[in-house]
Amino acid sequence: MPTRLRPADLLRLTDEGANGVLDGRFDHLIPDAFPTLDRWSTRLHADDDVDVWLISWVPERNTELHDHAGSFGALTVLSGSLTEFRWAGDALVERQLDAGDQASFPLGWVHDVVRSTDAPGAPIEISSDAPTLSVHAYSPPLTAMSFYEVTDHRTLRRTRTELTDLPEGGTK
Ligand SMILES: [Fe+2]
Image 1 (cartoon, rainbow, N blue to C red):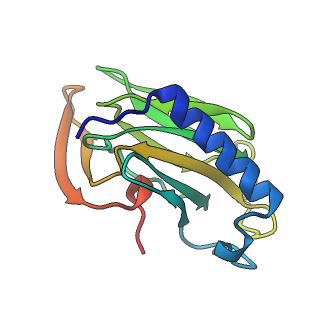
Image 2 (image 1 turned 30 degrees about the vertical axis):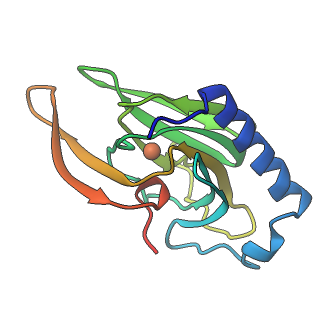
């Protein structure tokens, strides 16, 4: 089903979700301490057009290169920083997304996302007191993801496809 929403709508929804988390509106969904060993997520909203997730990121647990099948998406970084490696056709392009930054993902977007380390060579911070959090929206709601690897010929090879409604290659 085509979605009625546009990228700007998803950006707004992730912004509202982030504000809701800051305002305590989702405290009933959030643990006292975020897990420090694995990525954690909870669904903040779901309807026929969109689902919205809060994700807590931990160091060195990247998502692997993936797409979002027939969904497009958006995110707002709530705290901490994420590093995204996006496939640009013949190479991966890196960017950092800091607290307050937003990004949207059109159909066909292939990326790998990981929690940023504080600085090159810095000790990895795994305290649950300083979580790296982002709010993601997918429309239509996520149903599948394909995973990829970059070949020696600088092309993308699909390695597997999974039926999933969990965000960013999450496990639960
Ligand atoms: Fe993703």
